[in-house]
Length: 311
Image (cartoon, rainbow, N blue to C red; front, side, top):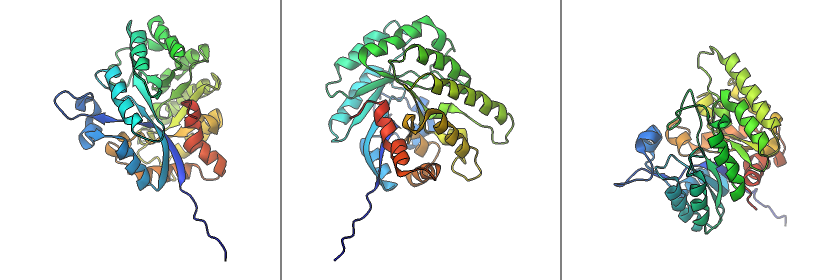
């Protein structure tokens, strides 16, 4: 008798999702800032990510919670640690700290001391300016001494930096990353490239973004990029006619597959951009067409584990 073995599911280590809860009298997270995503998904916990990943017929082997505009970054990190302690798989945490603040090191120390499960891996301080995201009042962080003081302190706590910026800020970020090679830098959301739907100005936007992405790739092997929130770039990102497919291949060529990773950005991609799990991961699978099984595993699992120092 012959033995038939069913193929195992594709594993995925999701390096970018958000735990949040905008309910209650004094919630950690702001429904006003989270907007449509917070309204459509007022509570999103680990069990929700597990269910969403399973809905795409994937095997979730680990994940990274990235801060979600909590009013108190230390309190949010401690709250996320509790979710991590109850899961048999690795749930890493990227906390929030204002690295330009005189209290930045105090906050890093508080998050580290409370991390009894060793799941804190990095810090995100959103820096998108013009178009500006909440709490970003100027564009001087990446070149300012106050921010640099907080940034270089990340190395003292063995923390990486989740970098979220606009394309015109990429070169300044690359210069800072090159100066501190001991601090892993994980670029969020494909560099936040946003294309116009009528095509006007897109050649210039792409050229600026491409130049900045290459600078970041050249800053050192400690720089990584998340291929995520592609619907922000183009709502039809998974269409055969979208320029996004070619741009993703360009980024993988710049950084190498070992420094690129697919990420869900759930719940925003699901609740705001209205991309269900099946569509999201089918789109990522299309971006892998023609690549080896080893490269696909790298993009789905191994690059993320390397960036966030997960065994």
